[in-house]
Amino acid sequence: MFNARERLNNFQNGVGVLMNENPETTKALMGFVGASLAKDALTVREKELVAIGISVHTGCEDCIAVHTYKALEAGCTRKEILEASGVAIMLGGGPVLGASASLLITALNEFEKDFNGKGSARA
Image 1 (cartoon, rainbow, N blue to C red):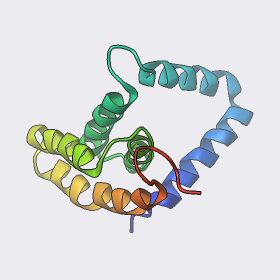
Image 2 (cartoon, rainbow, N blue to C red; image 1 turned 120 degrees about the horizontal axis):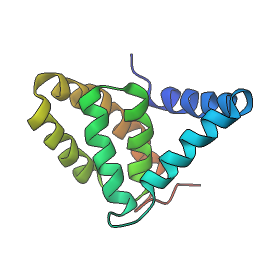
Image 3 (cartoon, rainbow, N blue to C red; image 1 turned 90 degrees about the horizontal axis):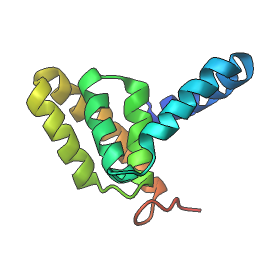
Image 4 (tube, one colour; image 1 turned 180 degrees about the vertical axis):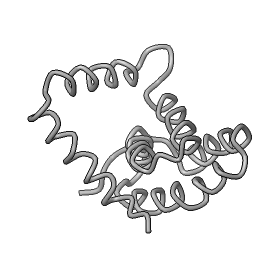
């Protein structure tokens, strides 16, 4: 069973281990990730919606957990996230529908309760 919070926590903890044990490679990749997701012509919100579409298209459970959380944190609404997955479903068909219907919905249901409004985590 997909546990979105566990996937998010395991990913974050694993990145921490990699930063300690393989710092040069991990730091370089995280720098690339940071640069890719930084506000530029597209906002962080828009980039996270793109990441949602790609995540469900590839079916990457860690990516779905991380980017669902990050999209909500950036102020994306449930409707916007589901529309982004809808575009991915249009291009990817049944397998993307499956990832959206199970993994994405589970992640949304888990992480929405962490936020009150746009991107502010509940204390």
